[in-house]
Image (cartoon, rainbow, N blue to C red; front, side):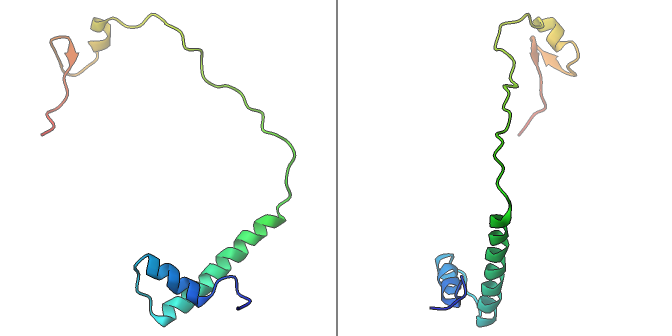
Length: 92
């Protein structure tokens, strides 16, 4: 077993699962890239944890029945209406 966290055999295995043909040079390239990516994730372990919890606040308004526009007011600024409804452009 190698010291690297990702081996070329593992890269070939993943490529096979994804049904991707890789040349030997590409396997080496991706192996190096995977190692670099995993090393980058290891730096996250160095980030200190914080103990404060986020202050959560409900930002939704209460669900309540309110007065709304009547049909005539709702259609007043519509560019096209027909029989009391909004009329949209023809789709097909």
